[in-house]
Length: 260
Image 1 (cartoon, rainbow, N blue to C red):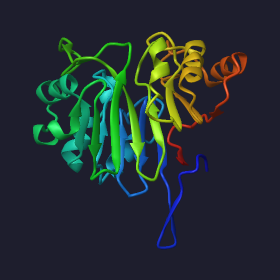
Image 2 (image 1 turned 90 degrees about the horizontal axis):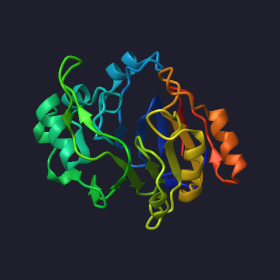
Image 3 (image 1 turned 60 degrees about the vertical axis):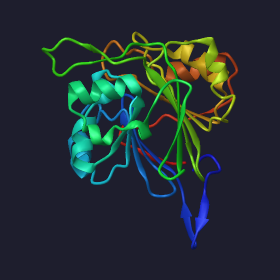
Image 4 (image 1 turned 135 degrees about the horizontal axis):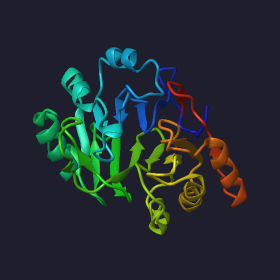
């Protein structure tokens, strides 16, 4: 167990659980029993049980997206149609996912749509989501033979869970110095950080980002899925040590669930 986020209710220990699907995809189960999916690309090359997990998803409250690329949108539309999950994304991305990919418009309303710098209060106050900058691109494509359609600005996500941790998902991003301000309003308990290089930060720049944010725990992602994503957790650990970053580094296995 990590982070002091346990609460008691009628003799039961209520916790937050985090499952890594590979690449940048996660499932979060809150202390109140809500299910959140972040960038849910379940059928990725690293997750051998992706199809089974997808079939087993019966209840999802929210799908949170950082940007429109296929390795992040993943099976969002399929999951939404199956479970009734609402879309949490910036306004331009939400519009593109609805108009181009067919995400149900009734599940992508103003109550779950925001933009960089704004904060949404969701699920009767159980969750707060703030959109942060990310240096990357954002397009959606109906299929492999269709041209890309602009989907607004990419974002990171600061997710504050009532009776639980505050999680910062960087999305896909390069390093930028203003990351230091992301933790101004929230102590970040868990930072989900891209380390793969080529399209995002590699280990060295990701370590610098962690130094600016100062999370209690750091979990690397967006590596190893394709040959060009050459950053590794081992190299990331070395870079953290090299610059004296104090954080608990947790390297998750694909499909693993940990208790926060």
